[in-house]
Length: 253
Image (cartoon, rainbow, N blue to C red; front, side):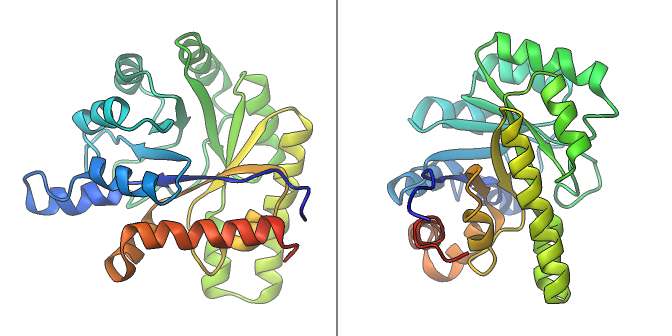
């Protein structure tokens, strides 16, 4: 409805770097992609520096921080190596995600509840550096409660199961997965956490998620970079922003 808060779009530019790395050299440049996304209305830039450096590299993170005036969201595993790089780069935010060496993409949320004693000091130490920490979690009340206990100010709800339901199953399954996201967002908000969401969001499925009032930021990457092949990155970002705005203000859901 019209009284809903504005919804931010963070554009993940990882897969511009994937294309670059497939051939070697420095083209296409993910920093240039970030500039285009910014010109098209992105509110922030997200980049995931993986342990194997399969796409984003250390220098990409440094250049993004130095050359792009938008908030930089550094997606990272909770490792000593990544903590040291975050300490060096000092991004606006770090989103802590699970990371497995063989996965093609992040496969699920972080098990905060099972790793509280490890994650809590990690969150605190990043916070002490002035970095805003979010935890990437499944739409699960147990994980959200744990995120609150370890001191994270933000949770990002994993929308991958909703995405998969939209691709392969019935309307009842889609509704079920969307309801889980809605309930998780409302619960996290009730605990005083800022709520973000992302993973697998597209032009076709973003609006029901964008319409959830408690969610204030969506982070979207792979789909936008893929669509850029056909319509250009700026137009891809503009269309996603339009869909998000219409869902937020038009009372569509």
